[in-house]
Image (cartoon, rainbow, N blue to C red; front, top):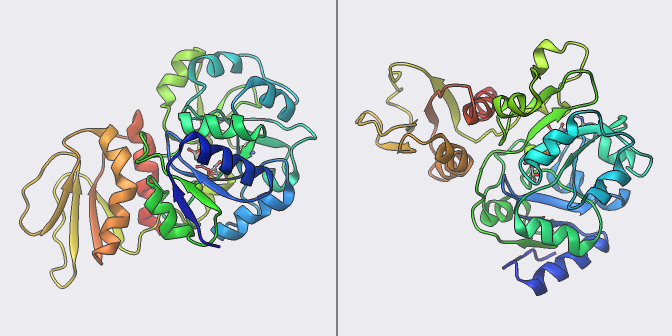
Length: 320
Ligand code: TXA
Ligand code: MG
């Protein structure tokens, strides 16, 4: 298969929608990262996602919608004050976990009784879902374990030949994935930090969001147990002083603000902007791999707001 990178004009969106209806895989931009889409109601099509990514089958997928009718067909219940969250934050980078309806194939939920749903705000994603007229299952469009793709080129690097087409919407705006929130229990539980902050959710709901660790009875987002976001290079996170690098290795230094440290010939920063760091960090890790860097020293940021998602991803990259 020759994966085509296409500008997301009307004709190409209609074509991609047709491919999705026919059971093919299409990669598309969202406001967070690029997704690898398949018809969520077609088990065979969804199986292709797992194959293309090398994704373990016990890791459930997010279903992307573009209307409340689609939502109603996929869930049996919209728990209490979840409506407040949907009204305030949808479309956007928030994924909600609901009790699933019989319409959701078990390949999506890894056999579980809940389904994760997100209404993306990206215009191309919305147009594609509407044009296809079906809900679209989509994980991040990277090989399992690699940093998520924030450009069409990243998708092509990982999935060339495995996807019918890639709609190129340019670099994604947020750069880290959606926040995943389980709303099936009495209190909402954060399963994955992401584009919407915990503080924002708590403010809308007027109650505390449990972190997955303090909700012992609730399984954490299954995907989070796997190796993730791991570049070839070793990732070392530091606070305070920059550690002494091993001069026998090729080292890179990544900081929030500009930092002159001549021990590191390769230095990157984000002009003090966490938004920019979220947007660029995955692409930077891929770029440093291309330059065959051995060790990337990354300065920790405050783990609140968007910083919570950034630190979550960096800590996983450092484990890899
Ligand atoms: O921003 C995003 O969410 C991107 C774009 C493409 O929408 N998608 C994405 O999908 O990041 P993925 O598959 O890479 O991550 C989905 C996460 C995984 O950690 C998975 O375990 C969790 O959501 N998840 C999916 N269904 C779930 C469920 N029913 N219960 C708990 N966690 C679930
Ligand atoms: Mg992913």
